[in-house]
Length: 88
Ligand SMILES: [Zn+2]
Image 1 (cartoon, protein in one colour):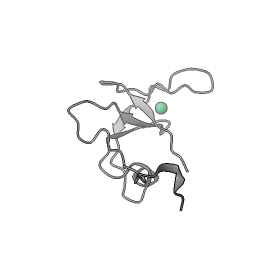
Image 2 (cartoon, rainbow, N blue to C red):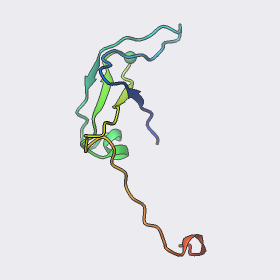
Image 3 (cartoon, rainbow, N blue to C red):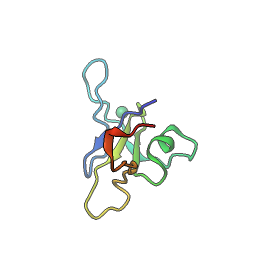
Image 4 (cartoon, protein in one colour):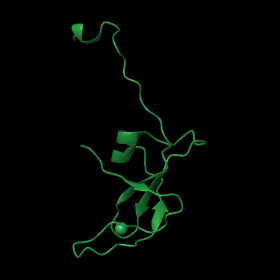
């Protein structure tokens, strides 16, 4: 399953998810230390900076900054040097 995350702007503290009436949720975004067996951990791995709205539980990822080592961590995929001529 794929989780969806909104991008949290630097300094953003209130949820900007819109409800059915088109009004902002404005719930408080709290740093969420997700458990290791959570879907977030499975999707992103541990140690990511995740925030969660207290009202609607929308998940936010902190905006990546250049000096952050935890902001962006890509899992490199093994690439066969022969490219698409080799399939498993
Ligand atoms: Zn919200």
